[in-house]
Length: 494
Image 1 (spheres, rainbow, N blue to C red):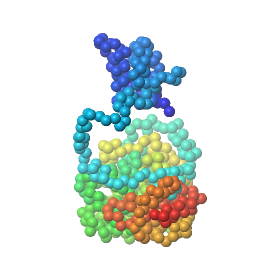
Image 2 (cartoon, rainbow, N blue to C red):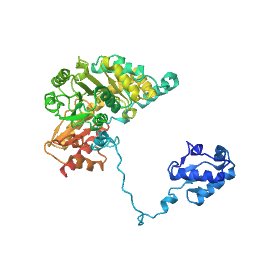
Image 3 (tube, one colour):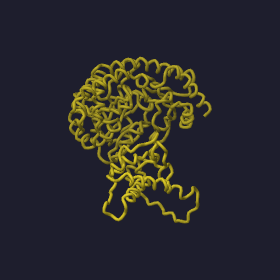
Image 4 (cartoon, one colour):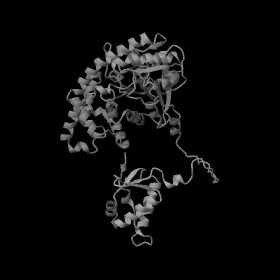
């Protein structure tokens, strides 16, 4: 598709009308430099000569001379009736044939300094992002089941009546109406008692992690994290010099009895008590209370990452850490990625009342604010009851898919894996009873449009467990069994 000059380069041209060089030479040289330097993209369409002449305040003949020279020297190509386009291959790129020997000395690359923090982050083996169009991709909801009509109606109503104030910078803590809706939601659905003044809305979960880290920790502070864990989110904590301390977990999540042997002086704990990623584990009540007690006794903070708590399938859900916390130690982070769509990139934090001002100040300094119109639409969507209805409807569908996933796995794959339970969330894990090359199996399945990430990709320290993570949110029921059959074949042939 041809590109057009929506942001004219010629507006920055500087013409010396009293200089010795003719105007057409000055215009040619400056446009040529813009092309060579990449400020004008290849295959972009140049404006008509009359338009450019009017923009520059020169005669049309001057621009015609410029275009003719650009064409003659190979910087543009002309198409009768279709306009003039920047060449796909520039003269400078044709001057030296590929592979031609050169006698010019090659200068040794000059080392470029980056921070030790950036070096540490670049050394992390970050897993690839999930593919929403592949079967069994974890953390992806059923995007085709979104209530598009209702969401479009709410969005249209919002834009017809949006207050002008909401199109400005807005509160650093987020739109008040959305914070009220979130406070109501976490109170009613999860038992977290809070006021809207304790809620902050940010542009994505990673911003929530960075914000919490900036407020609660200093350079060099030690942070206990789950191993295996959500590496991309945890890597954000390294950006301000935190020392991550991986603590191995089991299918019941973190165990605070291990903390003293790993990091007795930890300033912060990052935990996902419900549907932990990648294990899919749910932390029992005893461990939740013990973790909070450890944090209270050590004056440590807790980030509770509750990204998957909207959907429950078995029994009564356990209360989040934030609902059990009576000492103001927990910062609760949630988002709308699973309940609505990851494309919104909308997350929120619930913080203790005495920390609200510090978090608001940090949010303003770092500009960790989400789009105000997006917040307004989501607030109206929640207030209309549409989100609650969507969660109820999808809860039934996800329960059916989870049960089918477990049944098909045990039938088609066998007992070589320890399968996590699917009491909540949108994924489960299968941990191999023997060490296998899970990364190779995962890579091979991508050719079949099956996205089953290897558990080893999320290990932060020495790898002691291998296995796979399966999502059922984005995979229709009729495709679950065929996908698991292909998985079983890939494992058998590994």
